[in-house]
Length: 292
Ligand SMILES: [Fe+2]
Image (cartoon, rainbow, N blue to C red):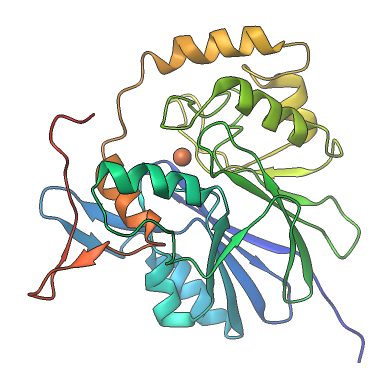
């Protein structure tokens, strides 16, 4: 029988956090989820799956095998639904090996006894390749926003342009780039990471991790390397390192901490679950006072 391997991509936009989630499917029943989102209400401390439900429905309809739960980085703006999906569908939770550095930093902030990011099934190195069923994917370490950011590059077996899941590096061209003022973040590092992504073929499809659409346009999830090179307000061709760093510094000075940063970072460093249950069996998050 002739095989019909395809690169199928579905996306969901969570308007509450401006986050994009993806399912990458090989057309033969194997797939990966990238950057899933769990609802979280900081007032009640309650998690929920309302925003996740359409993605769950789509996985149920697919049957087959959820192979990977991929995170592009340790998100500070939303909680990851990786463990919720893993419990329901199986699969391995994976991210970049820079997670170790982020973990070590926040283990001190939250006074954790654990010092290792042991909750992840796999932490990829730069350049590492892996399979999503019959699809070939490659990991690109793209630090700058945080030390742990990776992009996932998935080839089209039909010979079309590859799909690049950029995480928090590039945003839609009119919004520019991700902030660089988190622990371990660095504008010059992000500049070099993005230039590396921009060296990919011009027709590479760029899948965004976030969008914060102005009122004048609907949310976007996709762009191309060519469009980013031509039109990204922070990183289009001709913008030099020093100019980018100045732009980024100026912009970052105006940004407040993400509303869900303290819960999100703790939860996401544990690959999508609360760090510790106490003797009563209830999972707890910690809030360090007057640290940030
Ligand atoms: Fe982020």
